[in-house]
Length: 259
Ligand SMILES: [Cu+2]
Image 1 (cartoon, rainbow, N blue to C red):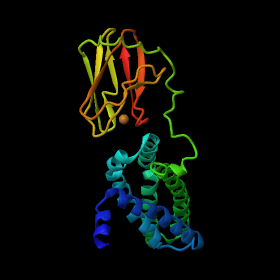
Image 2: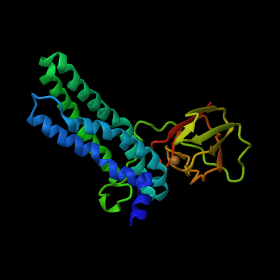
Image 3: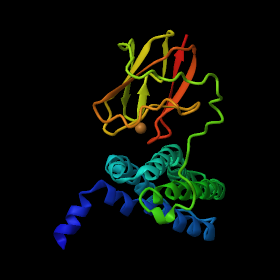
Image 4: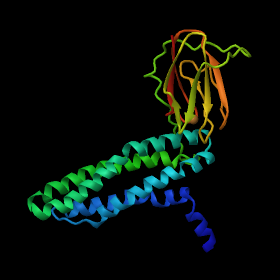
């Protein structure tokens, strides 16, 4: 029993799920308290939210690989979206944290600022609460199929307008590569690679998980899953700009430019 609990506590995924809702609940409680006593200072729940939010994000990052290996395909898309949302919106939580500290300290010297600072904390806090819900919304769908009442998030294809349709690869005629793209840390490096007509690009997966190279225009050129340590090549016979992405991690995007 104790052993099982200790084993759970060594798993970053478990800590993540355990700790993660705390900033949201802490913030909600803090905001209610703040709303009731809007003219007063010293809100311990705010400080609790400030203290809890950093570990939540850190454990989320550490849990990422573990959760990734467990998730199915739509789950991976939700995981990518969950991570992107957390990375983009974590700043609201930091903002509340900083603002609440300011709201605690400044009124000591200037008591009249207390009400305005409290209102500012309340406003940014409400935004953060919405942000937290938005992050958790994607997070809950990673492994809980029962919550998926809508299709997994797709990357926006409208912005990557069709410029040229990618040439179809002739089987067995891939020339030696003259340009290389490294896949690492959920990124294609370089993000834009320029080659000349007839040249071959090789993608090397040096990441910890499989990825794909899937062209956005029509999807008829698709590497399929490139396993860890494997590579895939494609020869480009027509000039144009070819945006591509990873079907497992739709936020991974890059472009091949053929001159
Ligand atoms: Cu990928």
